[in-house]
Length: 100
Image (cartoon, rainbow, N blue to C red; front, side, top):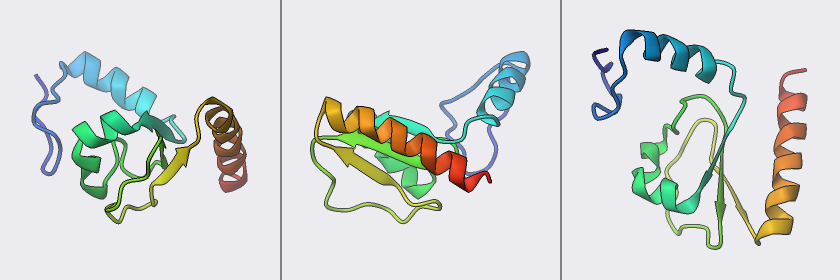
């Protein structure tokens, strides 16, 4: 088993081959899209996001009253399917702009 790093989630453990695969995959992610329920269960990742440094977009019906400061900041998308579909397009454009 891979030993968690300081500040990481100790309940998230992977074998060395799985950790190497995960790290390679995670390193290619330009952003993370999650639902509000996962956001709440993860306690907002304490402002660090599930992949620190990657923009986090949270799909929700209600934006929480308190949002931890994150870098990059969290973006909340509400309004149901039409807005969610539009949000994915917006996220793609945002990533294309930030990588240029």
